[in-house]
Amino acid sequence: MNSSSFPDSLQRSGGAPSAVEVRRSARRRRTVSAYREGDRTVVLIPARMSADEEARWVNVMLDKLAAQESRRMLGDADLAERAAQLSAQYLGGRARPASVRWVTNQNTRWGSCTPAEGSIRLSHRLQGMPEYVVDYVLLHELAHLLVPGHGPAFWQLLEGYPRTERARGFLEGVVAAERLPHLPVTGDGPAAPGSAG
Image (cartoon, rainbow, N blue to C red):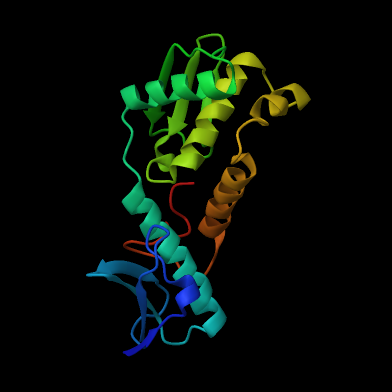
C-alpha cells in the first residue's frame, strides 16, 4: 500500500484545514472510502487511479465526511418545525402544511406534496445530506402548497432562497453518481450505483 499526503488546498474537515493522507492499495479495485484518524483524514483508493481521479475522489470524500459530521438527523417533529421556519422566512408564512414527514417508499423523488391535504413527504434518502439541500427540497414542496406545477410563479417563490441552484446541482450530482458504472463507493462513501434511486 502506497501512501501520500494531499495538497493543502484540498485539506479540510468541515471547512477547516486538516491533514489528508491518501492510501493506494493494489487489492482495492473499485471502491473509495475515507475516515478520520485523529487530526487527519485517510482516503483509501485503488492503486491504478490517476492523479486527476484521486483529486476528484478526495474532494468527494472530504465533502461527504464534513457533511456527515456537521448535520444532525431531523425527526418528523423537527421537520415540521423547520418547514414553519422556512415558510416564515421565504414565503411570508403563507405555506402551512398539515403534516410534514419522512417516508421510505419514495425512491425516485426527493419530495412530494398533496396540496389538497396539506401534506408534505420527504424521501428518507435526503437524511444525511447537507442541511441546505434538505431545506431546498422542503421549501420546494412548501411552494407547491401555494402554486401547483413548475411554472414561472412557482420558481419566483423560490428566488429568495440563496442556495436553490447549489442544492439542485448537489441533487443532480447524487443522481449522476448513482448511475456511474465504475468506482462504486462503500462504507463511508456515496451510495453505490444501483442503490435505491
